[in-house]
Amino acid sequence: MHDIVAIIPARSGSKSLEDKNIKELSGHPLLAYSIAAAKLSKKIDRVIVSTNSQRYKEVAEEYGAEVPFIRPEEISTDSATDKGFLTHAMSWIQGEEGDLPEYWVHLRPTTPLRRVEIIDEAINKIIKDKNATSLRSGHKAPESPLKWFISERGYFKGFMGKGEKYNLPKEMFDQVYIPDGFVDIVRSSFVMNTNEIHGHKMIGFESPVCSEVDSIQEFDYIQYQLNQNGSRLLDYLNQIKG
Image 1: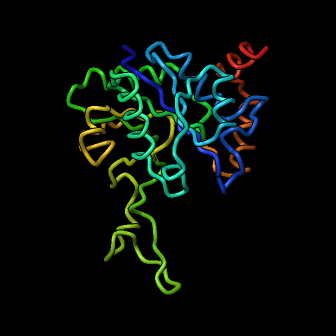
Image 2 (image 1 turned 30 degrees about the vertical axis):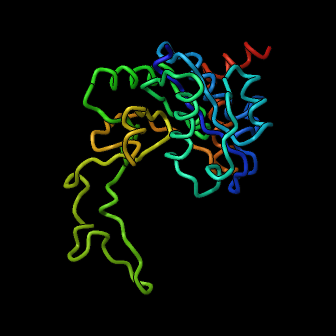
């Protein structure tokens, strides 16, 4: 039985950047980088792409992922939640194959540059913690959002309400983390039996600062990073498509 599955959501219809999940980055579609990360992992047994597009299905399969189903359009809209595609994938696997893998490693295509060993570290961490309901990655915020302002009738006021707590030094605030798409892991036994996907015992996994794609400017910046630093993932993709 495959007990650790990578699930890569790649719907078509993005409005922020047209067809961003298959937009070519150094000669390969964006979603291929997440497939490569999963393929290079020492822990992941199986790589599944969840998409609503036949075209995306063909691209994913070309790079070695499984696409055993086409995701329904009603859970592929701009307002669709992660819960929708996750429960759909889990229900399909359980219904068609019987055995349902416990650990689902959620790799978003919009975070293409990952270090594989960090993904494996995250998997080890949740496997060792039997009480954990999930794991989510985040990187350190340079400053607490509790020092931020909200705007009210053209005037700034403290996010924390009365007083000038926003003037306190940052050392007075707890460290906070910005959620990112480096790696999330959920457990099917929790997702399929609750209305949540992460739950109240979500392991906080500190990841490196990572860039995510939601605009052409962010895409161009990631291309610049690749040009400057290269990537093990890009090397792998060039090898299998060479």
